[in-house]
Each structure stands twice: as C-alpha cells, then as structure tokens.
Length: 169
Ligand SMILES: Cc1cc2nc3c(=O)[nH]c(=O)nc-3n(C[C@H](O)[C@H](O)[C@H](O)COP(=O)(O)O)c2cc1C
Image (cartoon, rainbow, N blue to C red):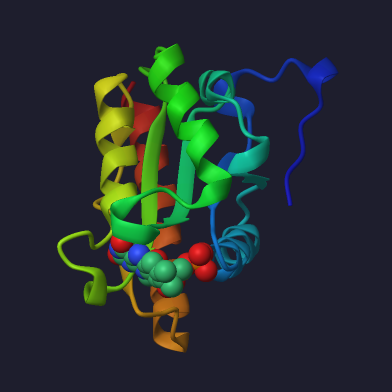
C-alpha cells in the first residue's frame, strides 16, 4: 500500500493512485481492497480512502483516481459518499490534472437506477476537467469471483491508461 504524509509535498504525478471507496454494506470496500492488491502486485502504489474521510481538494493532489462505489436506494450515493459528492459539486475543484476510472456496483433489479451514483460521479469529474481513462467497470449483483477477477484486470488496464496519459501530457 502506498503512503503520503502532509510533509512530503509529493507532486500529483509522484503520488500513489488514490482509491476512493463509497459503500453501504462493504462490497465496494472488498472490491477496492482486491484492486489495491492487484495494483501492488504489478508495482503500483495506491492509497485506499473511505469517501467519508475524503475531501474534494484531495483530488487536486493526485494525478490518478480509481473510485469504487455502489448505488443505493433509487439511484442515490451510499451514506459514506453523500457528503463527499455534495462538497465536490460545491467546491468545483480544477481536475484538469486528474485521470480517473470508476468501478460501479449495483443491481439491475433497481432499474432504471442501475449504477446511477457511479455515472453521476463520472459526469461530475468530467465536468470539472478530469479525464476518463477507461469506461466504467460495471458489477451487477456481485461481486462474484468473476467480478473480482474482472475488476482486478480492469484496474491494471486502467493503470496502463493512466501512464499513457502521463507520457502524452
Ligand atoms: C436497499 C437497496 C437499494 C439499492 N439500490 C440500488 C440502486 O438504486 N441502483 C443500483 O444499481 N443498485 C442498487 N442496490 C444494489 C447495491 O448497489 C449492491 O447490492 C451493491 O453490491 C452494494 O454495494 P456495497 O456493499 O458496497 O454497499 C441496492 C441494494 C439495496 C439492498
């Protein structure tokens, strides 16, 4: 697992991949932990942060973000993510230095609200200038072992897509 401390003054490109977790019952946290493990095995440092502990300004300190979040009742954010998302919209940070990918957890049982929170977060990040490195990885009714494998493989592709962006910018 990567680490930062306020005194280090890392530039965003030197910072670990930030993994933000939005969860109601823990599935997204489990997926995020698997993703962090896969990234570590491939030599990438990451930092897992519960959205309840995240501030919008943090997104300006990182060049790479993977958000793992579920959608809750009728398309809303999980409880631990509500305040973060509301302050993100209110603060409107400049995210032109950020590339991101999202893993969304949900269930088609809740159509038409399938993955609504994940898509809303993606739209908001786009609006503030962030670049989507890969299309959202969707988990329906999971996570099954196949979903977990898929999320890990997706995260590795996402990390590669982050590098491409860093080299070309
Ligand atoms: C009460 C309830 C409401 C839900 N609402 C939605 C929803 O509106 N849209 C969706 O895609 N999934 C919905 N889901 C499915 C969850 O997103 C899914 O179970 C997910 O794996 C939960 O992740 P978590 O454990 O990280 O909270 C709902 C599940 C429950 C139990």
